Length: 67
Image (tube, rainbow, N blue to C red; front, side, top):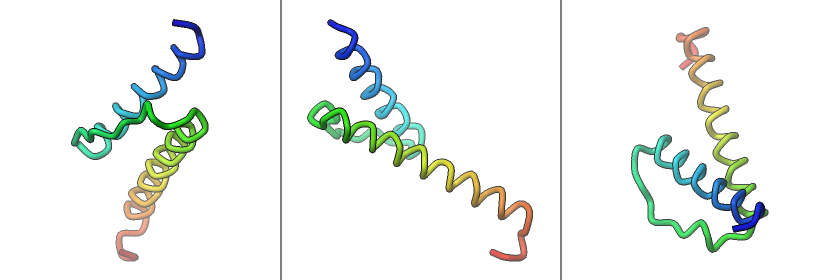
């Protein structure tokens, strides 16, 4: 296995773990079928969603009356 394959496999494993952690469920999505750019975009989407969730929680703590 060369370096590129190893990095791709690690990215797919990270995505599966992150989806499972976020949702609490395992999905049978064939991430290996996606190209490298799509995998990176999916990773970016998950990070953006996590950031938005953290910001919403922080905002709710600072201003609970603005729900």
